[in-house]
Length: 68
Image 1 (cartoon, helix red, strand yellow):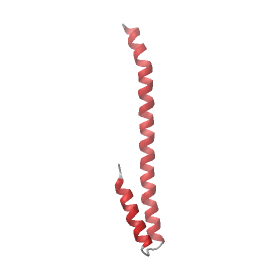
Image 2 (cartoon, rainbow, N blue to C red):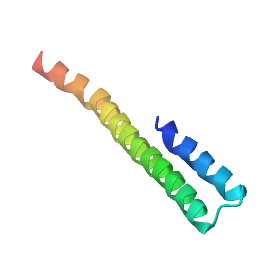
Image 3 (cartoon, helix red, strand yellow):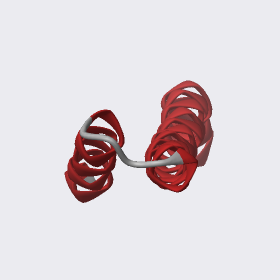
Image 4 (tube, helix red, strand yellow):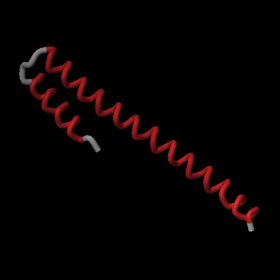
């Protein structure tokens, strides 16, 4: 997983809390946004693969029975 974005987020938050300006906060939020966008895409891909697997499990055995 892309833990690098979370590491960059924590570093930017630390710099912000250490007296950094709004730029550091903006950078931190961009890193966090990138992380959650990646997670969302991975969840969607996983859901699609799961649905395809379920459909295959439901439809392939009857089709094989018809061929025999």
